[in-house]
Amino acid sequence: MGTNVRRKTIVANWKMHTSTAEAAQLANGIVKGLSPEERVSVILCPPFPYLALVGELLRNTQIQLGAQNMYPANDGAFTGEVSPTMLLDLGCKYVILGHSERRHVLGESDEFINNKVRFALAAGLDVILCVGETLDQRNSKQTEVVIDHQLNSGLANVAEAELLRISVAYEPVWAIGNAEHHATPQQAAEAHAMLRTRFAQIFGKSAAGALTIQYGGSVVPADAAAVLSQPGVDGALIGGASLKAEDFLSILGAAVGCFRNDFESGSYS
Ligand code: PGA
View 1: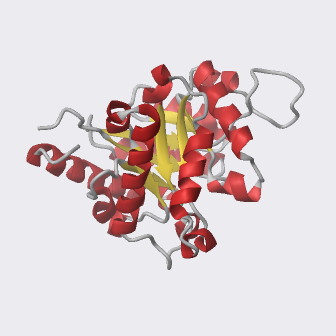
View 2: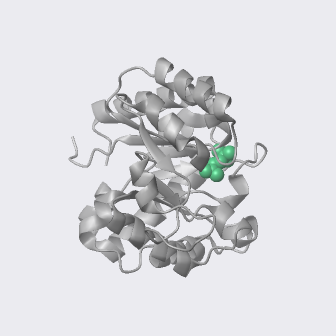
């Protein structure tokens, strides 16, 4: 069996959804339905206003709390922003950075995302860095160039000692929130392999072997096992399907099954 057995990591990105009552109900439903399974890491990322509430409901469970964004300063005159110190104070361990909605809707630059990545790590948050190409970029055969650039710029000047606190989420923009236009499991596997190769060229083989790369883009219970069983797909970042406890639990079940198969067959690398 290989020594690089990476756990599957399943992240729920609730985006700008839920109310107080819905957030509590969803978190409770996931906590209640989760079977004790140490081989899958589960992270819930509710909207900022519900972090404290959800954090409280996750206390003494194996589920971790994450945020969907942060500003790269500990405090100061940044109206409307939230600092990593505040997120840590609320019990967050993770932060999602570079999500395509922030790149394309909110106009975040590569440089700003890199600032956030470095600041988050220095402050003590682990980072889930999202990368992914648009449909035009894929159609014009730019996928590799785009995700290579986003990886390079996102991780510029990150110290080697911090690499274990970073995971990458490959999220093709055209497959996000798009039930009709899924990436095939093969397309996901190809992009993950490319990302891992590039990561190895930048940071070395051993760091690349330890890197968790999640796939994101309309993953639903029906196709979770197909994508999660691809080589090099180490988990998933789930948007829409994370808003129903039943669907999210079913995806977690698929992740547990895939990990067990890989682990027992020794095919995980
Ligand atoms: P989706 O969102 O699962 O709704 O496509 C994934 C994401 O944007 O993180």
